[in-house]
Image (cartoon, rainbow over all chains, first blue to last red; front, side):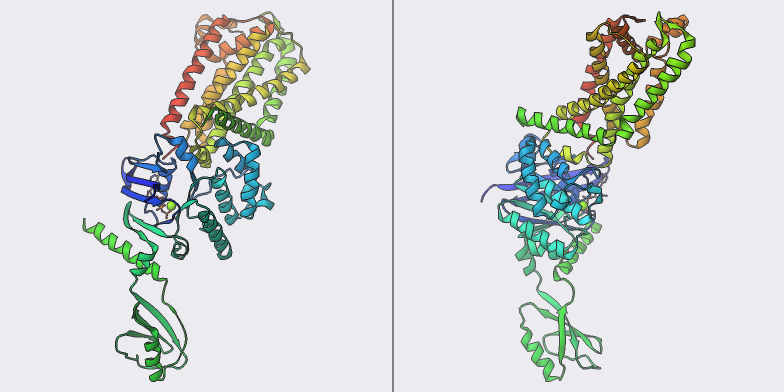
Amino acid sequence: MDLPALSIKNLTKIYNDSFKALDGISLDVRQGDFFALLGPNGAGKSTTIGIICSLVRKTEGTISVFQHDVDQDFSSAKHLIGVVPQEFNFNQFEKPIDILITQAGYFGIKASIASVRAEKYLKQLGLWEKRNDFSRNLSGGMKRRLMIARALIHEPKLLILDEPTAGVDIELRRSMWNFLKEINGNGTTIILTTHYLEEAENLCRNIAIIDHGKIIENTSMKSLLKMLDRETFVLDLSNEIDACPEIEGYSISLKDQNQIEVEIPKSESLNELFSELSKKNISIISMRNKTNRLEELFLGMVEKNLGQESQK
Amino acid sequence: MNNKEKWIAFYTILRREIRRFMRIWPQTLLPPVITMILYFVIFGQLIGSRIGSMAGLPYIQFVAPGLIMMSVITNSYSNVVSSFFGLKFQRNIEELLVSPVPNWIILLGYIAGGMCRGLGVGILVTLMALYFTSFSIHSLTVTVAIVLMTSLMFSIAGLINAIFATSFDDISIIPTFVLTPLTYLGGVFYSINLLGDFWRDVSMFNPILYMVNAFRFGISGITDIDIIWSFSMVGLASIILFLYALYLLEKGSRLRS
Ligand SMILES: Nc1ncnc2c1ncn2[C@@H]1O[C@H](COP(=O)(O)OP(=O)(O)OP(=O)(O)O)[C@@H](O)[C@H]1O
Ligand SMILES: [Mg+2]
């Protein structure tokens, strides 16, 4: 196996000598991966990211980025990392173009090279027209994209995004996904946190779920989805029924006279269900998944972890 | 980072600092000039003409060097303290913290920024002063050297203040309660030889007295104290403050959670 892009060993963070935000996290992210770090609010995602890019001081543990220890070899490590933080942290009174060229300067990149790159990324992210506006006057989604451009200006090999699509509209989110996929396709390793599981499912090949400062799951998206062995469908009926139909092998419940819910093992085919229903003269006009199945799985895991935590 | 990259990083910080105080010039450049014009009109011309001479100089020529020094001190200090605190407050400092810039470059960049503002205002105020009075230069070397060193020292002090500050109150406490009184009592407006023995001895503990006198010596050749003391004191203080500021940045506990 090739060398990991990011390797975290036994990372612990105690805030203010009292609150344990991270409790011995270990994690490897492969080169070229698109990796999701998931977890509920306050789980420790931003803390982990903060430590990787030296915004937060760790209590214990080691981190290396492409084999460069972030403490011992901080200059090389920092050249390799680009970060998009969760909160806006650029100077609101500066112009996007200046923000990018300044950030490049901090990495020792000449203004002549920086301005070429700035133009490229501002154009790709649809901000070129706004380059000379006060960044305070950009919309929320534009501010996020500005931070993405800023993170890319020194062309890092590892891009870390902390909730990049929070507050971004659907259309823009799709275009951001495409942009990130393209960057990932060109060889940049990407780590992202998000509360939209659809986003993780769409983009990421591997995931870790973190809760209460611990990794509770670290697997591939494929095997995570395999764990979803049952699905619930909501069926809307064209005619009203009074009693809940009973069909061997399916658990069906009546929601109201026009709607039933059916729980089905994933291996089961749906054809049988439909033919049984039409035999009973029940015709279906539409159907949908009850909730995002990934969301349910996620909630199940976090709840299970909560139960284990409270037993201790 | 190699040396060339370090130079680019330093230059980037400095350029950003200069842009900042130029962008907000009505807050940074205009007020000191207006204040100083008032001082020159009131103390120099209106009251000054009645005071006559001080330490053998016409009063306006006596106060002018002190007033110039006063604006260099306050502007060097307040440029760094407000810029660096703003950086912290907006979390904008994260741009620097995620980058590979070494702390000593950050320190030098901010000091250079403070000095540019301090010296820039100093030059503006000197031009104002020349409108009200004229003075020849007794020793250009002493004049330039003491202004540079004073500006350096107060820029570093401003940075230390900003590192410790956690609120906007914290960045005005030192200028209001320490810097201003020390300046007013630092021989800007009077010769300490006017004071009784006791208060003169107390004044000797005021570092600003040494800077103002060395500067006045540079311009007019007249001083209340030995300027060797001035240079040794400002030099030593700058070195100590520089090392302390560097230590605070390296430790990083007030910049990173
Ligand atoms: N500077 C700080 N001082 C004290 N506690 C902190 C600090 N920053 C974070 N915490 C605490 O550490 C825990 C983890 O916070 P963190 O920001 O890492 O969560 P997160 O997973 O990013 O959550 P979210 O999804 O809401 O962004 C939280 O309980 C938070 O209150
Ligand atoms: Mg977070």
